[in-house]
Image (tube, rainbow, N blue to C red; front, top):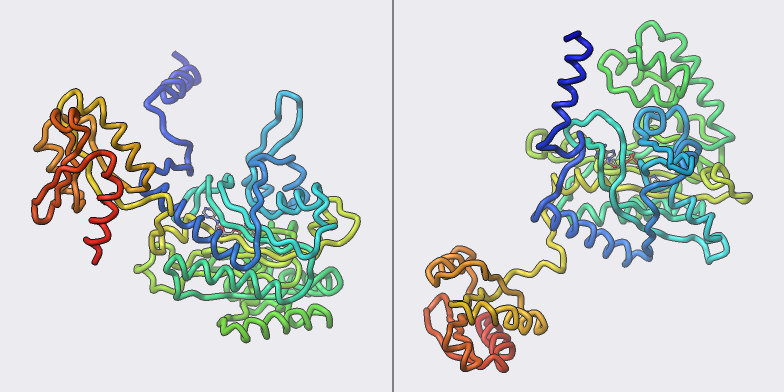
Length: 444
Ligand code: HAM
């Protein structure tokens, strides 16, 4: 067999089962699903208190929405976009982020005619064809907030405040907020020119990626994490010194609001963020836990900023000043406390059935308790009393209800207190009321 054919056969074989989920994408099972649900539920609750309303956009968009919105020359568009061509010939892309989609929806549905600003939150999966590593997935999840239709600095501070409140609810209180202003169309060109001049003089000392960034997207030079580029980066001109008067005023106001809200921050002149649409304020939050005590330490838990030109880029004839933030749910859930979603209730009773007739009737008993909203656990696929009781003990559930042959005929069940082993026969009709009563007594 020729080398090429061998390779073909081997590749074909590796495509046979058992299959695995695609690289950088995971199955979430049981508790993990609850952790995500719990986080998104809590984040939505905080957002709703602050006046945000929900929006859901499709997972697919016209590719142009991201190419134009997020920008060519950014990693997200150039390297990480999952694209596909439909049978009808449309070029679509899996969403790598929410902001461009939310702006597209805002414009498509004429939300400009609503009272401004429009405050929207969204959550779900996003797709970036990145190299999977610690805290970096190809299928990731975010909770996202956008305030569209206002250029007021209070909104920049507000999204940061909501971000911090959500982190705090998720048990992450030790945080570091980094902030910068990268100016607008009037002042950024001057800054960019200065940055390019500075790097031109130092091109011999920077990494190959930086040489590429120098040609395609010079602002991203400040994003470089390579050791050899750090000194050059630290001496690079900073954007805040180049801000025009309106941008300077805006940034000053943002800082004043943050101080008024007792939010600590550091100004990081190298913070530019990897998406093209930003103007003025940009920010990121990382966990401040010590290295080692937090598996996500050093990684950004979320970030955002102002994007006053994105509306026009996506076809609006009027400017749509806007600001927003995205929280990286995967990273926050790995570092924070686990939040239980409201639908998950700790079982208060364990249901045991004995014999064929009882098994037949068990669903009726489960339904009675479900309707009365009494959370229960059971194992109706098991037969013996001993194995069912052992399970109730293991789950440390305070009460069991037992349905045997005799109880089936009498329309009753036995309610057993697992602590003092006392038991009582109760009619099915009175079961829900009785359980609610003893549960209240037990709590006291
Ligand atoms: P971003 O910085 O690309 O911003 O992502 C926000 C957060 O999502 C990151 O700080 C990180 O926690 C998480 N994240 C990003 N990529 C991954 C990944 N591959 N795996 C796991 N987590 C990840 C945006 O997405 C902007 N749309 C934020 C925004 C909203 N700006 C204005 N409004």
